[in-house]
Image (cartoon, rainbow, N blue to C red):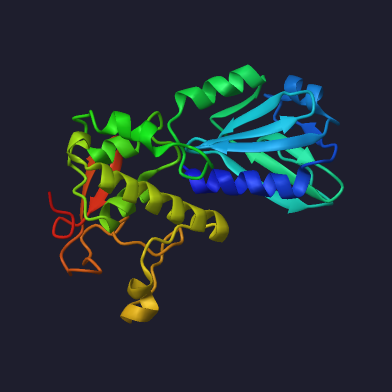
Amino acid sequence: MPEGHTIHRLAEDHLARFAGWPVRVSSPQGKFSDSAALLDGQVLDGVDAHGKHLFLGFDDADWIHIHLGLFGKLGFGTTPAPPPTDTVRLRLLNDDHYADLRGPTTCALITEPEKRAIHDRLGPDPLRNGDDPDKAWRRISKSRTTIAALLMDQKIIAGVGNVYRAEVLFRHGIDPYRAGKDLTHREWDAMWADLADLMREGVRNNRIDTVRPEHTPEEMGRPPRVDDHGGEVYVYRRANLPCHICGGEIRTAGLAARNLFWCPACQHR
């Protein structure tokens, strides 16, 4: 499932390609046809992202709400657009660009109040200006749940997925099994600031890189990482490999329905 930086990048991509102009809206697959007909020819005048939720706004105050889920894909191209396949749930088209959405968990036309209700049930997002990390801290500081599980709970903090979870805990030397109530406020503030920096870099570069400059392949004289998510990391998907810092073995285990990765030597309780 895409992490929050990907959704914010998609919001920026829609803004650059479609905002401010009438857009042709269609649903070749048919599942969004009625809503597409209502929007066809309207001006796309706003985009928004919160965690893993993308919103495309139109001039009569309706929004397309998109959640890619595990299998959704959103791709862009320049005109002339090829004939859409019957797997395309939503196509946006103008004179210069097209965007095709396939396989999302959610693609629905919603009102402004319905959009606000989605925001209200989500935690703060490190990439949203003005979101308050203390809103998450108030829940984390009272919880006996592990910090690794809390970081994946979108009602507590929005946009963090399995990669950022593993990497930010490593970067701050925090055992993933530590209870939220045992985290200090200073540790949480540092993690939030770090997540914001890392995720902003993810938006800019369209990939996740979490290693510090002194731990890049060039600086350490090691081969670059080869992985379909594309970035340099400390522990994610590096089970049984040596830690870049201490040389110990990276561990993995299931937690919060996903595989957790950590270095027991660097992330002690």
